[in-house]
Amino acid sequence: MTIKKRIVIWYTLWMSALAVLMVVLIISGSGYLMSRQAIADLEEEVNDSAAELFRRSGRIDTDELDEFDDGVYIQVYDGDGRLVFGLDMEDFPPFSAQQVQRGRSGQWYVYCAQRGDYTIRGLISAASTYTYLGSLELMSLVLLPVLIVLAALGGYLIVRRSFRPADQAIRKANDIAGASDPSLRIDLGSGKDEIHEMASAFDRLLDRLEDSFRRQQQFTSDASHELRTPLSIILAECEYALGHRDDNSLLTEALESVQRQGGRMNRLVGQLLTLARSDGGRLAVSISSFDLGQLTELIVESLEDGARQKEIEITSDSDAELIVESDQDLVTRIIVNYITNAIQYTGEGGHIRVEARRNGEQATVSVADDGIGIAREDLDRIWDRFFQVDGARNRSSDSSSGLGLAMVRAMAGALGGSCAVTSEPGAGSVFSFSIPVRARD
Image (cartoon, rainbow, N blue to C red; front, side, top):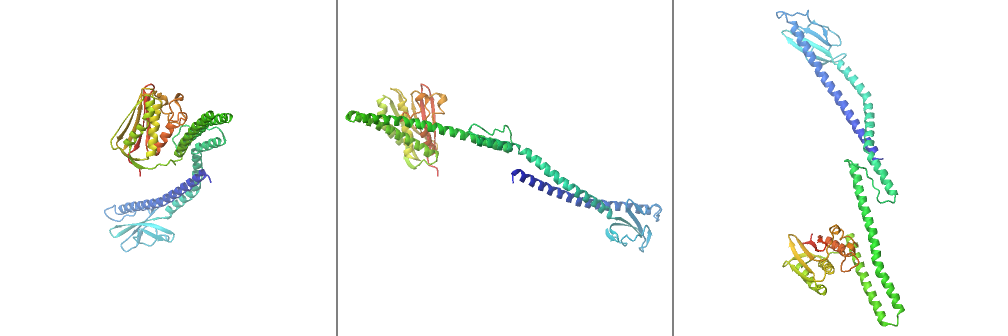
C-alpha cells in the first residue's frame, strides 16, 4: 500500500472519529440544554400563574389562568390535596413535588410553587424534547456518512496535491536511473516543504557523487599516465640493454636507469596506497609521545646538505620541550615533504625558515621560503591529487607525481590536524600544518 493511500485512510478514519464524537457531543449537549430550558420555562410559567392566582387582595382568582400554555399544564391544589383548577388527565403523574416524574405516557418535568394553603403545579412532557432529539439523531445519521465521504474526498485531494512534487521527483529519479548522463538532477525548483528539501538533498548528493566520479576518473587517468612513463622507460632500457649485452658500461647505465624508474614507481605506488588507505579510513596511526621541536631540528639537519647544494640557507627555531602525542612517522613525512618542496622551488641563494610552535592545544610547524610562490587562484587546488601549477609547484620530493601535498593533507587529517598555505607569486610561500598536542581518546 502506498503512502498516499495510507494517509488518506488514516485521515478519513480520524475525521470520521471526530465527526462521530462531535455528533455525540452535540446530541448529548442538546438534550441537556433542552431539559434545562424546559425546566426553566416551566418554573417561569408556574411562578407567573402563582402571581396571577393571588393578584386580587390575596384571594384566589383562577379567571386569568390558562390550563395549558406553551406546552405547560397548570394545576392548582388546595391544602387537602384536592384539584381546584386545571386538567386532570390520566397521562399525568400523581400529585407530588418531585421535579421529574413518570406518568402513563412517559416522563414529565414537574415544578411546584407553594402559595399559602395552595400548591400550583406545572407539568411539561419530556416527549417534546425527545422528539427534537430524535429528529437531530436522524439528521446526524443521514449527514454523518456524507461527512465521511467528503472527508475522504478532501483527504484524497489534499494528499494528491501535496504529493505532486513527490510524484515529479520519482519520475525524474527514474529518468536519472535509466540515463547515462551524470549531470541530470531532480531539480524541483524552489519550495520550503519537506519534499523539496529532500529533492534538494538528493541533488546535493548527486553533485557529490558526480564530483567523486569525475575525480576518480581523473585520478585513474593521471595515475595511469604517471605509471606509464617509468614503465615505458624501463621497457626501453631493457630493450637497449639486450641489444648491448657485450658492453658492460652500457648495461650498467641501463640498469641504473631501470633502478631509478623502479624507485620512482615504488614511491608513486606507496603514495597511492597511502591515499587509498586514507580514503577508506584505514591509514594506520601509531600514537606516541615525542618532542616535536627536537624532531623538527633533526629533520632540518638531515636535509641541510640538499639545501647547501643550491646555496640555500635553511634555519630553524622551535619552542623548548614541545611534547606532543601523535604519530612520529607521519609527522616526519609531512615535515620532510614541506622542506624538500621548499628546497626544490627556492632559487639559489634563497632562504628557508622552519618553525615549530605551540598555540594553545595545537602544535604548528611552518616552512617559509622565498621561492617562486603560487598564484592565488591555485591555492585551494594545490592539495588536489595530480594537480600541478604550470607543471611546477604541486610536486613533492618525487618531482613528477603531484601527489605529495595531497598525501600531506591526508596524513594531517588522520592525525586530527589540518594544513594551510599562504603565498604570493615571486614572494615565496609559507606551508604549515597543525596537530593536537594531546591525542584524542
